[in-house]
Image (cartoon, rainbow over all chains, first blue to last red; front, top):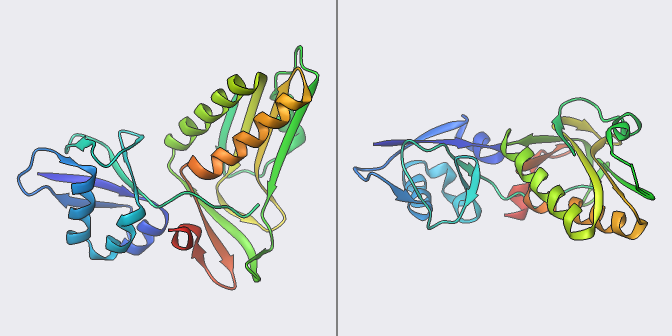
Length: 85
Length: 137
């Protein structure tokens, strides 16, 4: 079972592509927290950013205890706070 | 209610024509401009990237809540993405209300929340290229 995860901004540049695959290692569904742990282990360039990353499932930002499976549209988002004006 | 995320240059005067002003006594607008410095470093432009579909939904929710909370009539938000040169507008907000205090409050609430919640990321283009999320995170 493999979950496809979209990447944006600094995450996309770190990884050099806009989507990664995360091996669910036999689990049918995982929580957001488990997603971050799996991404850190399987895609080490993204590990540092996982602490502050936001998770979107089916185009809504969710808490880390939310479950997701390979049918879902999942994205990892860098923090969005800040600005120049 | 108009929410637009676009690569095109923003023309505030043209955009305002779409704002509903019937029964309103005030229109407050906010234009965010790309500054040419960031922490003493020169900035030539900001590069904006966003999550299409999600950004628009988040901003629409913010505007609807602000209109309700502050009793304002109509609102619009236009946000640019891609490369925005220093001195150009990156975001334009307009709010109409019966009274000016309602319009000012709603407009300020909308820009504050967009900066905190909308799925838009900025990268400095200039002396040093850096995503703002790298510093903030």
